[in-house]
Length: 64
Image (cartoon, rainbow, N blue to C red; front, side):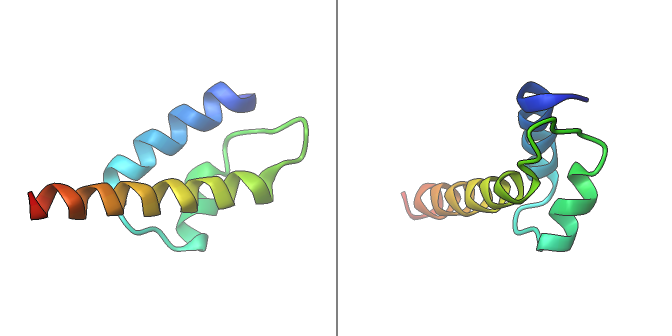
């Protein structure tokens, strides 16, 4: 897959299966997506941040 649309789709599918991924798991899950801009570090950070947001939302939903 190429560029942001592929990155976002892969990250969403990955995070549905992996709630609290390690950096190594993120890199492995995203390795087949290519970024022409070379933003791999920022993509990894974004996936990590999205995982944290999803975890916080899940915690909030459990409290309600």
